[in-house]
Length: 205
Image (cartoon, rainbow, N blue to C red):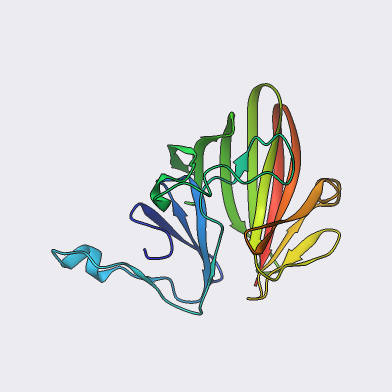
């Protein structure tokens, strides 16, 4: 997929809420609503074109790792200055498993943590991203929730100019900072991981 790379895994959820996960970098890459995917070329053509998301125009999420270990909140995100882009810091993808309803759980390692990620649709039609993080020792990591040139930030959420709202729960959002990087802003969240911790991110568009 153009929006999620050559190792994309696309998932259609109830209510025509869809996402693509880049298994090469272990990163949620693209969100869209409406009809799912035109994958005919991947099945029937010798020289495979990109699979095309159908439905409404979606939202591209920040490339590279969701998590990073930083010595200061305003440090450059690891891998963002790597060349070429394909060398950006990535998580180590460990595959996925399906639950009884067919929803995948993605398994990967990032910033010293083992991660289990599961995405589901809420009753309100938003996308809930549940992350279970496990570290063998106490560590501070940063989560980059969203990137954009025109972020509008309130206490518990950030909204992009394209209409994507990213929301965190109260205690976690209190640990967030908006920092400027390369003519754009990033919403970064400080996480103290000791053993196993779970957090949720909600996307609305």
